[in-house]
Image (cartoon, rainbow, N blue to C red):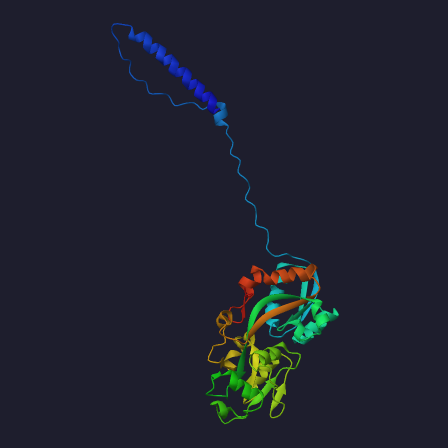
Length: 321
């Protein structure tokens, strides 16, 4: 079409040159008025030019929905996050049922190893709770960063911070009264988690440096972060360690005295920067490679639906890089 237009223009120019040459041979030349060119009439080909517009593609859903039923168990520190994610996944994916249980990290690891659950939630690495061959048969899926905080009953006034050394003295039984660390004349009541607890193992490793905890004096042992939180609020002189999600719960927080550790606030921001040391990865273990709904849910846990939305910024942090 464009080439044809160019040939037509060339012929018109040649014709005009011939007419001009003939006219110039006459004695007198009368200039004809310049005619206003008529608007060009589009040819049929020009009038029928079609524009092809590709349809806008609808973005594919980011959630990989798989139907079925799976069960998780283990860390009660991780349990609120896993429960929220499971509820959100099931809402997006009808036909998927995810049951979330607690029991402690050791329980979760033992149950996933035995095949009685699909996912074992743990605050600690599998090789700290299981024999090496058993631990090696599990696959670790890190889904978040989490922190814990030392909390006391509100009757423990005047204490806002405990150093690592003071925590060691309290938890090994060297200090038995709050007045030894600047608090009131009130006996210290230690509330432990069972030996299977990842919370207890993490605190013992990072703060107590592996020291043996007190066995005498006034102590209690409770199974879950939730049970410990309730006991702290109702037991004078009590102290324990709970996950950020339990401390930051708006129902619990006004009833607890949350303490700094070595002068550092217990916040996710400080966990992320590495200045607050009572923190660890949140691990979801499977026996071998995950498949089906288990694999889809683990993918969901590390995707933007959880990492950018469900993870509460004051209780859990995104996966460390």
